[in-house]
Amino acid sequence: MGSALFPIVAAALVDGDGRVLLQQRPPGKEMAGLWEFPGGKIEPGESPEAALIRELREELGIDTDAACLAPAAFGSAPLGERHLLLLLFVCRKWRGMPQPLEGGALRWARPAAMHALPMPPADRPLIGLIEALI
Picture 1 (tube, rainbow, N blue to C red):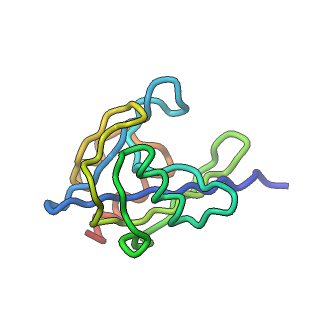
Picture 2: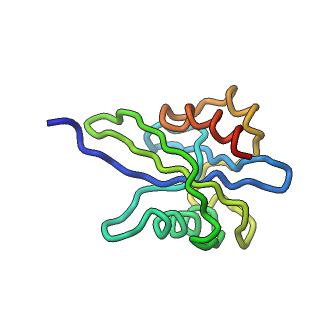
């Protein structure tokens, strides 16, 4: 019996200058202080796209459509008793200005600058893929 699979969705929100939005994990959460792509877990019965649209609304106060989410890459990392499967989408079109509604800071970074930032193990290998995509 392996560990249970824990699927989560995340977005690489890309602005007109080719920068990507990163969110800092707030204090008190697992991996607090690390920079990650915004997103979260998929609720039962939700598609990955629906989960990501909901998470972006809850965490950042922005709206987007499934048609604006392009499947980009996936990450995989052990997380305690579970195994994290991170489904990353690229999104270039959304409505509203991203705000850190659930605490933690936000920053726009070019993919090349992300290598120097502390990021969770599932997010780090995706930097090079995003660099190639945008």
